[in-house]
Image 1 (cartoon, rainbow, N blue to C red):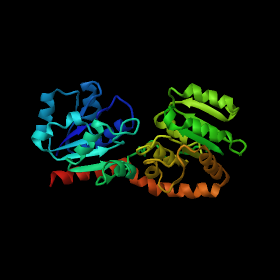
Image 2: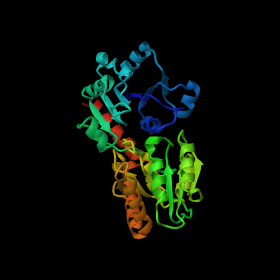
Image 3: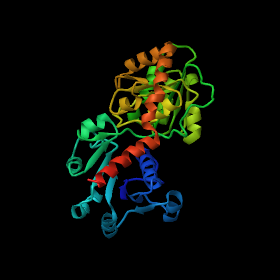
Image 4: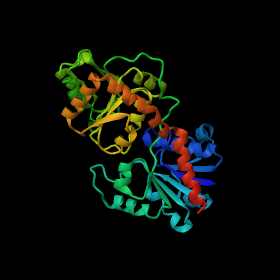
Length: 339
């Protein structure tokens, strides 16, 4: 099967959708299918072949794009890209679209581009949504397949877990809610509780100032951005991970990574975070500092509740392993070609 795969950003760009595209494309290739991946990200063609073993076409010309459609048995878009869809008006290839985020502008509204994207979903052979929330918001007929996490990196390690330790992982920007967590943490009534902030971003200095203002600097540490095995080792040291996003996350791979490293999850109740956590964590009302504080206090006071939630994690995580998720995507692509 010749698969034309489009991903707006790809390696060496770094981000959630880029990681998902990498996992899926590598699995399709390793399963024996021919692959061409089109992306806007710049890179080295020599490095691409060494790293991936399939052709990556960066910023193709119209002629090259037409050639790729002619070659393809099926087109898979990991998020809709209207600028790359027009050749299918000529070639009518089976089209599968993966929805990894909302079809809305940054302020939550739908303009002309978003309306056109929603209309284009009706032309697809199949649509896959990363969460029930995205499915409900964007295309009710979509098949839901949650995003994968790297179970080879994020797993339980023989590392001593710090008692009463809380961790936040994410970019330090306003919509991730780190300030909400810091404010709630300041009012926790548990001695010797510590909060670790993993990540970096434009809000870091203001968050550090907030910590000083609340007089909790001794209990809060900022350790910057971590990746890979170093990140997994750090997560294994904590009891509770809080994901306090003010933005409705489409999914939330960070929650899976925390669960896999043995953290009990407490997340805001917006968007796809509920899919990511399942029955292995608790949620609080998005943007509600007092509800966050109350749930955090509950977890710190109830070790039996934490143990029960941890017991649910292994069965929940099995649905999000790389091979399982990528195989489900590939199965849909194969079924579309056979129609």
